[in-house]
Picture 1 (cartoon, one colour):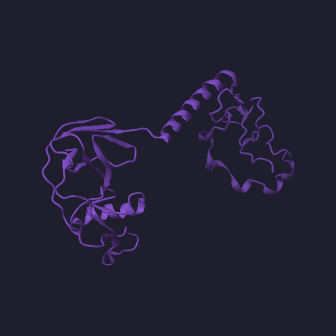
Picture 2 (cartoon, helix red, strand yellow):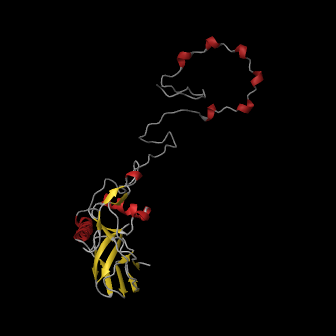
Length: 256
């Protein structure tokens, strides 16, 4: 159920409602150790509600953990009469319901935020862990989540941004250096070394039809290795540009 009655009147813990870290300590302490609290702690409430302070439990201190807080004095539980809640209607930003008794606090299980406004009840008051408690002043209660000044400023800035997009698109066109400003250019692969391209190309192998050798036709056993005159090889006859002479197949290293 979204709206439920309370069995015990809440107690007010001062100085923690508007402090995020302090409220986190209070909310988690009550949620994890409800036996330490005889009543649910609230951030504010009517003058008739008991006021207590929350102090750090020295027996529960741990490094890098949220402090556990306990009431600084004993809580005097105040029992509340039973309340019947009916005709509950919950929208995206609204909660409506009826009660059969006026002046008895009820718990609204919706996250507390200052933007909530209420008709037919006092509150809403922030209550642990981060819900709302209201005190009906009529049999019908209506709660609405209103817009704040910050919300309206954000809407105005959004509208201005949309208008500027159309203005720039219509009257101040953006010029890009290429028709595809967001594409990454890729280099054109070189498939033909003889093609007339500006890109440099280093020859690694040059073969002609006349240089083709039928490897299968070579009789390796018939080659007389001892008959080869190594001293007769003219090393200086190699062309200066590093390319083989016509009719001499082989792999050529690029000139250094």
